[in-house]
Length: 222
Image 1: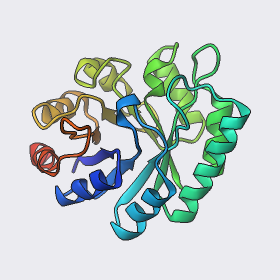
Image 2 (image 1 turned 90 degrees about the vertical axis):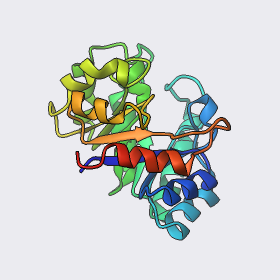
Image 3 (image 1 turned 180 degrees about the horizontal axis):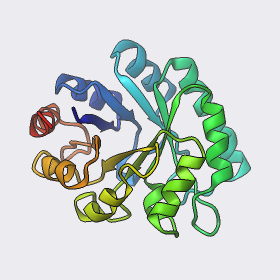
Image 4 (image 1 turned 180 degrees about the vertical axis):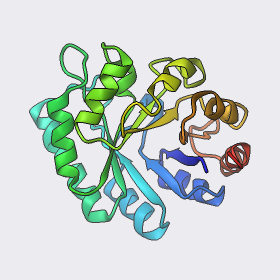
């Protein structure tokens, strides 16, 4: 069975995802800039009131993925909050000044997660290194999942690279970016991924329960 993760940029979006049949969300805010760390209230509500498997994006600001000491203090506090709230996972991504996977920062985040799963997000798609080498770095740091479009603008465009990443390490490859009910089945069949990530967003950049239901139906039986 294909696992589906819905990118929910608000608590209302998380509620819509649940209404559409989803059980797992990546909670964030400000999807227009690629997503930022959600509020403390939304994290607690999503985990404890909605009862969703909640994976929380940890990103203190838009822009690159090389953070200052002050920003790291915020990252550490956010990861600690997620652990207290009972989140299933945190979603992080770090690149060094050369644009390569920042192993030191990623290991630090995994250690701070302390029992929670860690997904390395689409900072991977901006890494200035071959995808298999970048994947190995993510695996070496202890991440359990990699959210990626295959270093392409969207997952349908990155099918060849996604296919080359699947099964290469213990890290589960989650195909994300541009996944819709219309193309989800093709992406899964063409790449061999067992997990997909989609926003199912409407014109207001919020999750549509109807699109979530359609996405679930599209990959049923795979």
